[in-house]
Length: 195
Image 1: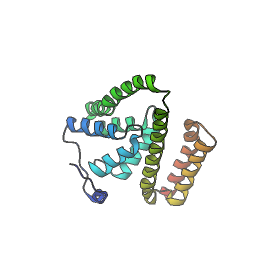
Image 2: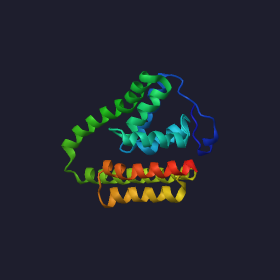
Image 3: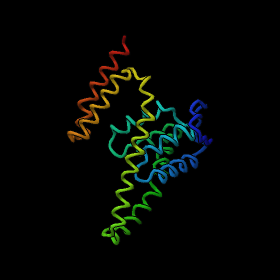
Image 4: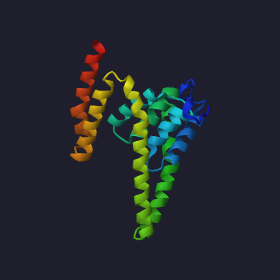
């Protein structure tokens, strides 16, 4: 079931009709989000096909960030497993990686020949700016879910700012940021849920 409007978030959740649909949805989002899949994944899985709520997406993304490997690949594995077990995990992974692998290998070969061209360097800088803008837009869109967080908007926002500062300003490795702020956030959330 394909739903294209943001107003569709109130529509009931669906599920893939088979392994073929699972493959093509992940293949489509991988191709649309080339260089920055996260914003496209949120739009496809939450708004278009409605397999997940925003809260579900954030939960899976949070788990995916703590696992080794690319976040969105981990999310694809978990969604595939959720609907079709191990077969679904492999099919979703294949959908995520098949076409981009061919494209990356082709572009790598072309880049080897044209890397010194100013137009190529300019195009790569432009794509980087677009990817950063898409990630920022997704973060703003998903920020609305903080209202339902047990931490509350203020505390959750403070943790998000602290995380951003540690990674972007002080250049802490992500694993140390997670080790420092993860237990703190979990403890605070558990205390608030017990009240």
